[in-house]
Image (cartoon, rainbow, N blue to C red; front, side, top):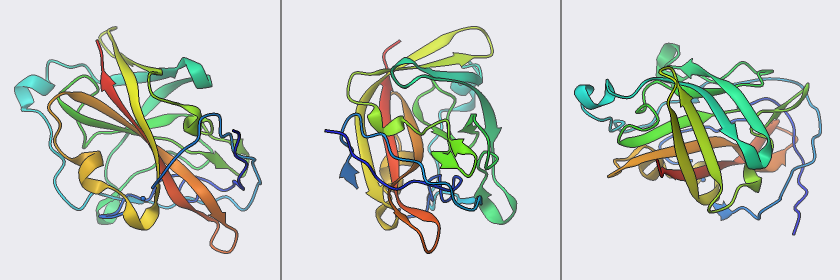
Length: 210
């Protein structure tokens, strides 16, 4: 059953705010939001409050860096930029009008053991963002990460969740995992027309299948 909800603004109004507790409702499949342009703006992403568990350097070195992301079901095909930490320890976000997603270099490379974090805008003043249709994903959908050595890591969606930003599941997103996993993150839920921010985050959980 389609959902229509107000949308607008760039990523911090269009991207996740990752704090030690930002977050959930299960997203209905095929819930494409309606875009409502507002003043553009973007805010830095606070880094996770706890340490990100990465694989040993020897293991990480065997996995090439990610260069592109493809999600056939929702028409996503984008290069991946690298996102680190900004001044003050906040996580960087893609440019507000960017149509590319970004891999957070503080997380494992896709295919290494742990949770690899990729973030993207849901929309901006100029139109839909690269992750505008992210809520349409469902269990069993495929996600592909091409790496700098020409190899491709294939992931399968296991869960799609919407979390109020004051209940973000930091440990689940950044915590240790026994295998290679992927987290795709954007903004969603209700839109606050006063603050020009979304009130929730959409998180897609996926596990590597090959």
